[in-house]
Image 1 (cartoon, helix red, strand yellow):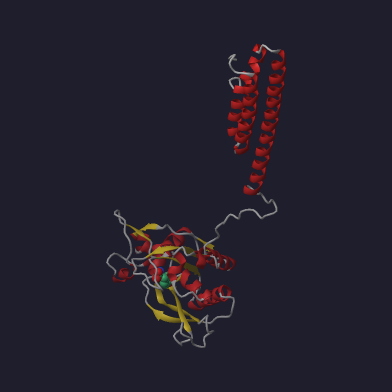
Image 2 (image 1 turned 135 degrees about the vertical axis):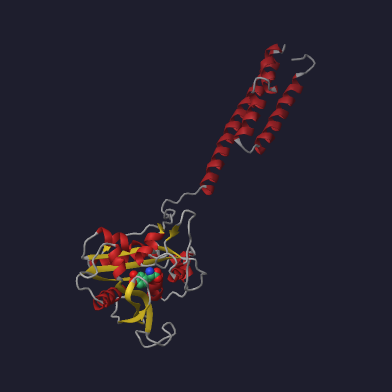
Length: 349
Ligand code: DAH
């Protein structure tokens, strides 16, 4: 310590240092700031440490005592202030964490949305269930099939004009996105012996301009029943039973002749209107009836192609669109809703 610094100056300097450091401590905000302050105040190179180190060089023992006492007192005071400040910063931090990261373990957890089964799939399962209880087996079609199964085996040879009504998508190697699940008729008929009872639910594809009643992709359920002595009345009985179960009410059915190459006689089956119970409404156009499916007695040529003798056996077949059935069950007026991915619609099922 330089001799020219007299003791009064030293005492004054210690007093100044203490108030200067007190001021810095009062504005320190966090533990990092406090750490560097600690080094500055009490570290090896701090001014106070330097004063303490050099007390021994003071000549006058009285001075040594006075300056020594003062400097040590200053050191203790500052140490105490530092540790108090450290505590208060920690306490503030913890109080803040509690506010910011408040955890209420009594709150319910985050709900993860899970999907559910699509209404069309649900309804296909219902149809399968009803038909299985009536003794039908269930087969699924190939989504892409050949001309032979989609057309030829159901009596639609190449260049048959009726093929136009099933115009669809072809692959470059002459395969087809199936136009109907009748594509499975021959496979089922030729692989089993009568009695044969089977349904074929599956997706079909048509080259179709879409509107509220038409989709390019939709589902069908084809049905076939072959045995000795099977007739049209049996068919109407089976279908009436099915529709009564599906709509959970008594329904009437009627058959109107129409042309399909794979049945003879062929026709449309109508159902007493589900919405007005046959009284007449805008959906059934005041007729009380809804044309719901194509059906008929399987054409002898179709049986022959599957090696079933048409003189011994007879059978009936039908095909209906699943979406149409659901639309009537729930009074849905646009088929496009099924595949639009509209959750407000889908969540209702
Ligand atoms: N395959 C026909 C269609 O897609 C529906 C159909 C009509 C199937 C009459 C049949 C039937 O089995 O006999 O339009």
